[in-house]
Length: 290
Image 1 (cartoon, rainbow, N blue to C red):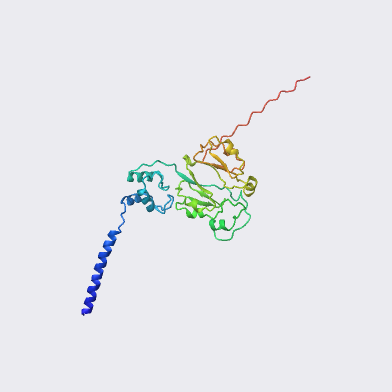
Image 2 (cartoon, helix red, strand yellow):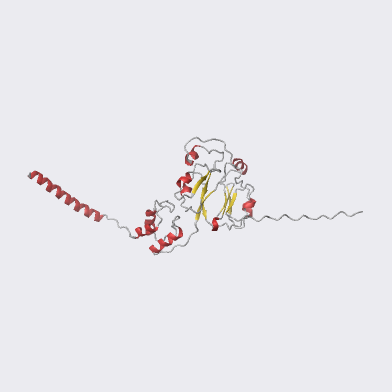
Protein backbone atom coordinates (compact mmCIF):
# COMPACT_ATOMS: atom_id res chain seq x y z
CA UNK A 1 0.00 0.00 0.00
CA UNK A 2 2.84 2.37 0.84
CA UNK A 3 4.38 1.69 -2.57
CA UNK A 4 1.16 2.66 -4.35
CA UNK A 5 0.83 5.84 -2.29
CA UNK A 6 4.46 6.70 -2.88
CA UNK A 7 4.01 6.19 -6.64
CA UNK A 8 0.98 8.48 -6.70
CA UNK A 9 2.84 11.19 -4.79
CA UNK A 10 5.80 10.97 -7.15
CA UNK A 11 3.56 11.19 -10.24
CA UNK A 12 1.72 14.19 -8.83
CA UNK A 13 4.99 15.89 -7.98
CA UNK A 14 6.38 15.23 -11.45
CA UNK A 15 3.18 16.63 -12.98
CA UNK A 16 3.36 19.80 -10.89
CA UNK A 17 7.05 20.37 -11.68
CA UNK A 18 6.42 19.77 -15.40
CA UNK A 19 3.51 22.21 -15.39
CA UNK A 20 5.61 24.88 -13.74
CA UNK A 21 8.44 24.35 -16.24
CA UNK A 22 6.04 24.48 -19.20
CA UNK A 23 4.49 27.69 -17.85
CA UNK A 24 7.83 29.48 -17.63
CA UNK A 25 8.91 28.16 -21.04
CA UNK A 26 5.64 29.39 -22.56
CA UNK A 27 6.13 32.81 -21.00
CA UNK A 28 9.71 32.93 -22.20
CA UNK A 29 8.89 32.10 -25.82
CA UNK A 30 5.46 33.72 -25.97
CA UNK A 31 4.82 35.39 -29.34
CA UNK A 32 2.88 38.62 -29.23
CA UNK A 33 0.22 38.99 -31.92
CA UNK A 34 -1.15 42.37 -32.80
CA UNK A 35 -4.91 42.38 -32.06
CA UNK A 36 -5.45 44.41 -35.24
CA UNK A 37 -4.70 41.28 -37.27
CA UNK A 38 -8.03 39.78 -36.18
CA UNK A 39 -9.84 43.02 -36.98
CA UNK A 40 -8.30 43.29 -40.43
CA UNK A 41 -8.88 39.59 -41.12
CA UNK A 42 -12.58 40.03 -40.34
CA UNK A 43 -12.76 42.93 -42.81
CA UNK A 44 -11.32 40.80 -45.64
CA UNK A 45 -13.69 38.68 -47.78
CA UNK A 46 -12.27 35.34 -46.55
CA UNK A 47 -12.03 34.04 -50.12
CA UNK A 48 -8.48 32.70 -49.59
CA UNK A 49 -8.00 32.84 -53.35
CA UNK A 50 -4.38 34.02 -53.31
CA UNK A 51 -5.10 36.94 -55.62
CA UNK A 52 -3.37 39.30 -53.19
CA UNK A 53 -0.15 37.31 -53.48
CA UNK A 54 -0.43 35.66 -50.04
CA UNK A 55 -1.46 32.17 -49.01
CA UNK A 56 -4.76 33.31 -47.53
CA UNK A 57 -6.67 36.19 -46.00
CA UNK A 58 -5.10 35.61 -42.58
CA UNK A 59 -1.56 35.86 -43.98
CA UNK A 60 -2.57 38.93 -45.96
CA UNK A 61 -3.98 40.52 -42.80
CA UNK A 62 -0.68 39.91 -40.98
CA UNK A 63 1.24 41.49 -43.86
CA UNK A 64 -1.06 44.50 -43.90
CA UNK A 65 -0.66 45.12 -40.18
CA UNK A 66 3.14 44.85 -40.36
CA UNK A 67 3.48 47.04 -43.47
CA UNK A 68 4.51 50.67 -43.04
CA UNK A 69 2.73 51.50 -46.30
CA UNK A 70 -0.17 49.39 -47.57
CA UNK A 71 -0.76 51.37 -50.79
CA UNK A 72 1.04 48.77 -53.00
CA UNK A 73 -1.06 45.96 -51.48
CA UNK A 74 -4.51 45.14 -52.82
CA UNK A 75 -7.32 42.63 -52.32
CA UNK A 76 -8.82 42.00 -55.78
CA UNK A 77 -11.90 40.27 -54.40
CA UNK A 78 -12.81 42.97 -51.89
CA UNK A 79 -11.72 45.79 -54.16
CA UNK A 80 -11.45 49.42 -53.18
CA UNK A 81 -14.24 49.19 -50.59
CA UNK A 82 -12.40 46.59 -48.49
CA UNK A 83 -9.04 48.34 -48.86
CA UNK A 84 -10.56 51.62 -47.65
CA UNK A 85 -11.92 49.81 -44.59
CA UNK A 86 -8.53 48.23 -43.89
CA UNK A 87 -6.85 51.61 -44.27
CA UNK A 88 -9.20 53.11 -41.68
CA UNK A 89 -8.43 50.30 -39.24
CA UNK A 90 -4.69 50.79 -39.65
CA UNK A 91 -4.79 54.58 -39.78
CA UNK A 92 -3.35 54.73 -43.29
CA UNK A 93 -4.53 56.01 -46.67
CA UNK A 94 -4.83 54.18 -49.99
CA UNK A 95 -5.62 55.34 -53.48
CA UNK A 96 -8.48 53.78 -55.40
CA UNK A 97 -7.32 51.35 -58.09
CA UNK A 98 -8.95 50.58 -61.41
CA UNK A 99 -10.81 47.26 -61.28
CA UNK A 100 -9.51 44.42 -63.44
CA UNK A 101 -11.24 41.61 -65.26
CA UNK A 102 -10.03 38.38 -66.85
CA UNK A 103 -9.88 38.27 -70.66
CA UNK A 104 -9.37 35.18 -72.83
CA UNK A 105 -6.89 36.11 -75.57
CA UNK A 106 -7.72 33.34 -78.03
CA UNK A 107 -10.45 33.21 -80.67
CA UNK A 108 -9.35 29.87 -82.11
CA UNK A 109 -12.73 28.20 -82.09
CA UNK A 110 -13.57 25.05 -84.05
CA UNK A 111 -14.73 27.29 -86.89
CA UNK A 112 -11.42 29.14 -87.17
CA UNK A 113 -8.88 26.53 -86.10
CA UNK A 114 -9.17 23.11 -87.76
CA UNK A 115 -8.64 20.01 -85.64
CA UNK A 116 -5.79 17.86 -86.89
CA UNK A 117 -5.59 15.22 -84.14
CA UNK A 118 -7.58 13.69 -81.32
CA UNK A 119 -6.31 13.63 -77.74
CA UNK A 120 -7.26 10.53 -75.75
CA UNK A 121 -5.88 11.11 -72.28
CA UNK A 122 -6.40 12.97 -69.02
CA UNK A 123 -8.66 15.99 -69.48
CA UNK A 124 -6.17 18.58 -68.32
CA UNK A 125 -4.68 21.54 -70.15
CA UNK A 126 -1.51 21.26 -68.07
CA UNK A 127 -0.97 17.63 -69.09
CA UNK A 128 -1.81 18.25 -72.75
CA UNK A 129 0.55 21.21 -72.90
CA UNK A 130 3.43 19.02 -71.74
CA UNK A 131 2.64 16.11 -74.05
CA UNK A 132 1.93 17.78 -77.41
CA UNK A 133 0.58 20.87 -79.17
CA UNK A 134 -3.08 19.95 -78.78
CA UNK A 135 -5.94 18.97 -81.06
CA UNK A 136 -4.83 21.65 -83.53
CA UNK A 137 -1.45 22.60 -84.97
CA UNK A 138 -1.39 25.93 -83.11
CA UNK A 139 1.13 25.67 -80.27
CA UNK A 140 -0.22 28.84 -78.62
CA UNK A 141 -4.01 28.43 -78.67
CA UNK A 142 -6.45 27.33 -75.99
CA UNK A 143 -6.43 23.59 -75.29
CA UNK A 144 -10.06 23.60 -74.19
CA UNK A 145 -9.90 21.24 -71.21
CA UNK A 146 -11.17 23.85 -68.75
CA UNK A 147 -8.39 24.02 -66.15
CA UNK A 148 -9.26 27.70 -65.79
CA UNK A 149 -12.91 26.88 -65.09
CA UNK A 150 -11.94 24.41 -62.36
CA UNK A 151 -9.61 26.95 -60.73
CA UNK A 152 -12.27 29.68 -60.50
CA UNK A 153 -13.98 29.87 -57.10
CA UNK A 154 -16.46 32.55 -58.13
CA UNK A 155 -18.33 30.86 -61.01
CA UNK A 156 -16.96 33.46 -63.41
CA UNK A 157 -15.74 31.03 -66.09
CA UNK A 158 -17.50 28.46 -68.21
CA UNK A 159 -16.71 26.50 -71.36
CA UNK A 160 -18.66 27.33 -74.49
CA UNK A 161 -19.47 23.95 -76.10
CA UNK A 162 -19.95 25.55 -79.51
CA UNK A 163 -16.53 27.22 -79.68
CA UNK A 164 -14.59 25.03 -77.22
CA UNK A 165 -13.26 28.19 -75.55
CA UNK A 166 -13.70 29.55 -72.01
CA UNK A 167 -16.08 32.46 -71.48
CA UNK A 168 -15.67 35.05 -68.70
CA UNK A 169 -18.68 36.33 -66.78
CA UNK A 170 -17.59 39.90 -66.06
CA UNK A 171 -20.17 40.35 -63.31
CA UNK A 172 -18.74 37.45 -61.28
CA UNK A 173 -15.05 37.94 -62.06
CA UNK A 174 -13.08 39.25 -59.08
CA UNK A 175 -9.71 39.37 -60.86
CA UNK A 176 -8.21 36.97 -58.32
CA UNK A 177 -5.86 35.65 -61.02
CA UNK A 178 -6.46 31.95 -60.33
CA UNK A 179 -7.36 31.31 -63.97
CA UNK A 180 -4.26 33.16 -65.15
CA UNK A 181 -2.09 30.82 -63.10
CA UNK A 182 -4.04 27.73 -64.18
CA UNK A 183 -3.62 28.32 -67.92
CA UNK A 184 -0.37 26.68 -69.09
CA UNK A 185 -0.34 28.75 -72.29
CA UNK A 186 -0.93 32.13 -70.65
CA UNK A 187 -3.85 33.07 -72.86
CA UNK A 188 -5.83 34.56 -69.96
CA UNK A 189 -4.88 38.05 -68.88
CA UNK A 190 -6.15 40.53 -66.28
CA UNK A 191 -7.01 43.78 -68.02
CA UNK A 192 -8.48 47.08 -66.92
CA UNK A 193 -12.25 46.94 -66.52
CA UNK A 194 -13.74 49.95 -68.28
CA UNK A 195 -17.23 51.36 -67.95
CA UNK A 196 -20.01 49.20 -69.34
CA UNK A 197 -17.48 46.34 -69.52
CA UNK A 198 -16.16 47.59 -72.85
CA UNK A 199 -12.96 45.98 -74.11
CA UNK A 200 -10.62 46.21 -77.07
CA UNK A 201 -7.82 43.65 -77.24
CA UNK A 202 -5.87 41.40 -79.59
CA UNK A 203 -7.39 37.96 -79.14
CA UNK A 204 -4.29 36.03 -80.17
CA UNK A 205 -0.89 35.23 -78.66
CA UNK A 206 0.67 33.43 -81.65
CA UNK A 207 4.23 34.69 -82.11
CA UNK A 208 4.89 32.89 -85.39
CA UNK A 209 5.26 34.81 -88.63
CA UNK A 210 2.10 35.83 -90.44
CA UNK A 211 1.84 33.02 -92.97
CA UNK A 212 2.43 30.29 -90.40
CA UNK A 213 0.08 31.83 -87.85
CA UNK A 214 -2.67 32.24 -90.43
CA UNK A 215 -2.24 28.61 -91.49
CA UNK A 216 -2.90 27.51 -87.91
CA UNK A 217 -5.86 29.82 -87.32
CA UNK A 218 -8.00 31.99 -89.60
CA UNK A 219 -8.23 34.78 -87.00
CA UNK A 220 -4.58 34.79 -85.91
CA UNK A 221 -2.62 38.02 -85.68
CA UNK A 222 -0.22 38.16 -88.65
CA UNK A 223 1.87 41.07 -87.35
CA UNK A 224 1.03 43.40 -90.24
CA UNK A 225 1.36 46.48 -87.97
CA UNK A 226 -1.66 48.26 -89.46
CA UNK A 227 -3.21 48.67 -86.01
CA UNK A 228 0.11 49.96 -84.69
CA UNK A 229 0.35 52.62 -87.38
CA UNK A 230 -3.19 53.91 -86.93
CA UNK A 231 -3.05 54.25 -83.12
CA UNK A 232 -2.36 57.84 -82.00
CA UNK A 233 -2.14 57.05 -78.28
CA UNK A 234 0.83 54.66 -78.33
CA UNK A 235 -1.44 51.91 -76.98
CA UNK A 236 -0.53 49.28 -79.59
CA UNK A 237 2.81 47.52 -79.22
CA UNK A 238 4.46 45.24 -81.78
CA UNK A 239 6.76 42.48 -80.55
CA UNK A 240 7.61 39.02 -81.88
CA UNK A 241 5.24 39.27 -84.88
CA UNK A 242 2.35 40.02 -82.51
CA UNK A 243 0.31 43.11 -81.73
CA UNK A 244 -0.68 43.89 -78.15
CA UNK A 245 -3.06 46.62 -76.94
CA UNK A 246 -2.17 48.14 -73.55
CA UNK A 247 -5.45 48.57 -71.68
CA UNK A 248 -3.98 51.35 -69.54
CA UNK A 249 -3.02 53.45 -72.55
CA UNK A 250 -5.97 52.60 -74.79
CA UNK A 251 -8.54 55.42 -75.15
CA UNK A 252 -11.18 53.24 -76.83
CA UNK A 253 -11.07 55.26 -80.06
CA UNK A 254 -11.76 52.03 -82.01
CA UNK A 255 -9.53 53.00 -84.92
CA UNK A 256 -7.48 49.80 -84.78
CA UNK A 257 -10.22 47.22 -85.14
CA UNK A 258 -11.29 48.09 -88.74
CA UNK A 259 -7.63 47.92 -89.80
CA UNK A 260 -7.27 44.27 -88.74
CA UNK A 261 -7.67 42.08 -91.82
CA UNK A 262 -7.83 38.83 -89.83
CA UNK A 263 -10.34 40.05 -87.21
CA UNK A 264 -7.98 39.15 -84.39
CA UNK A 265 -8.79 42.45 -82.63
CA UNK A 266 -12.03 42.19 -80.68
CA UNK A 267 -14.15 45.06 -79.43
CA UNK A 268 -16.82 43.97 -76.96
CA UNK A 269 -19.90 45.68 -75.52
CA UNK A 270 -19.70 48.69 -77.83
CA UNK A 271 -22.69 50.10 -79.72
CA UNK A 272 -22.84 49.10 -83.40
CA UNK A 273 -20.69 51.16 -85.70
CA UNK A 274 -22.46 53.59 -87.96
CA UNK A 275 -22.51 52.48 -91.54
CA UNK A 276 -20.26 54.57 -93.76
CA UNK A 277 -22.34 56.12 -96.55
CA UNK A 278 -21.13 55.24 -100.03
CA UNK A 279 -19.21 57.91 -101.86
CA UNK A 280 -21.33 59.79 -104.41
CA UNK A 281 -20.75 58.79 -108.02
CA UNK A 282 -18.96 61.36 -110.10
CA UNK A 283 -20.90 62.58 -113.10
CA UNK A 284 -19.09 62.39 -116.39
CA UNK A 285 -19.74 65.01 -118.99
CA UNK A 286 -21.23 63.78 -122.24
CA UNK A 287 -18.90 64.02 -125.22
CA UNK A 288 -19.50 67.11 -127.32
CA UNK A 289 -21.18 66.50 -130.67
CA UNK A 290 -19.09 67.24 -133.70
